[in-house]
Length: 124
Image (cartoon, rainbow, N blue to C red; front, top):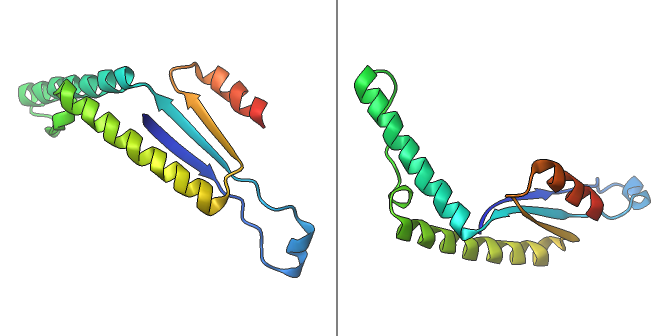
């Protein structure tokens, strides 16, 4: 699950007046894409690096980029996706235990951003 994890943390001052405030609510927002889309994007990035490097060689302008192995090999890209998914899931479980996250928003990033916003507000 190629994800970006955003945590909104609300901090309340530890003074006497803090007793007047409600406890903070934590939200974790996870934008994810499926494995096929992740692999497609990684391979596209590799193609873009090759095109960029060709332009640098032809024009002498810019710096060469070193493509990652996962950006040129579909099998390695799928393995990278699997490792990242496993690490992110474990991290989310740890966050849930340590910070008592109230709400998880797991959102398919392939959806248009307007619909994403409506989904988050709707959970709100």
